[in-house]
Length: 464
Image (cartoon, rainbow, N blue to C red; front, top):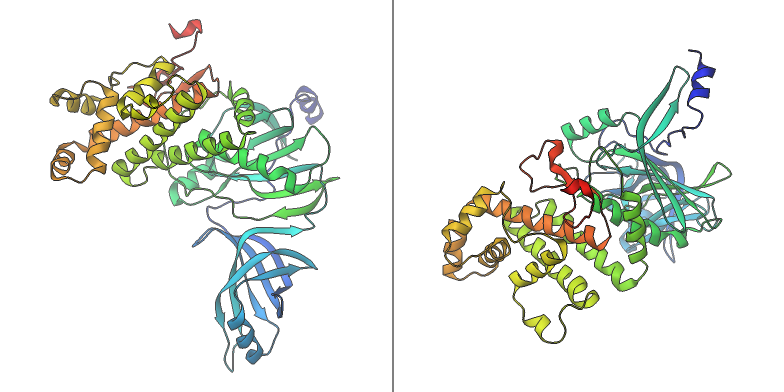
């Protein structure tokens, strides 16, 4: 078949959106600028001939280095007086930073300085309104989404690479890099960071100013972190007007170092994710609710990443469950009012959450160590009681509690953590009106399609 015939056949398929920044190896530097720039405070300035790049280690962010074009004696005096300063490129402020290393040179070597940008780092005129944003997303798990085509001189390929998120204000598209599997394999081998998706954001209401889009990008980053089970963010954001890049944002928005963790979305379907995004971005509009979403997902990804091992993660997960109880059961549903809401014990708070989710109080059949812990304990009656008692044994340091903790099998603690994480996932999905299939981390069939099942509260016939 000729190329023109193939193009005609796939004419209705959208073209893949490439990441504006390409990484072929994990943790490779990304060049931002090379040439002369200024570092200055209110009194002094130094012209530097060097380079600025985005580095992942030892600290992620924009780093600068170069040769200061100034006498060594003046350099010593000025840098000793610097606390923080602005970096100026082509007459525009790139960002603020501080010097981390100064070599004042010798008879055979020029002086040299190094430093790092703090907070915002934007190359170009950020005051100019743009038509759309292009960005990169590192370390995001794989989704088999909507079909896109990739056209090269040699061939045309079609793949299910696209995740499309749309609400009343914006259309956001995320496309897996065409060589996602190779990139992900390299990431698994070396760890760290690598770009896996390219993205595009367009407004339904005309041009975009950078200050007006920050909150939406924060919302997107938080949402993607919930899907991913680890933090990720839109990075290397390019403001585009008339197909020309007007400015580039190289700010270090937080992304977690790579780690394989369980996550709740299906792998082979994106059904329901756009509706989930719409509900998520609607709740986000209220400042108090925004704080709830950012906080609950913070505790969720920390616990899911096994921060503090099982013991520390159980404490974080139960902090999240406490927040869910207060925000959802007490403040929004108002199932309990007055002082009674404060006096209820922790296991009953979890039981109230489960009552809204159509989830039983029993332990999953796959969690045999946790069930054995319950069977061997005379005063534990169900799963909520078990996870609370394990948490109490961790938190409280009395001799009796320490002995009890040391007697709990490490697998029972791990299973208690997974149960708590499942409760968090189910609570958030119910709050967000999700009504489709998800990956059940408590299933005995963890590596089979049988682990993908409908949420417990669904009324769909397939859930029988």
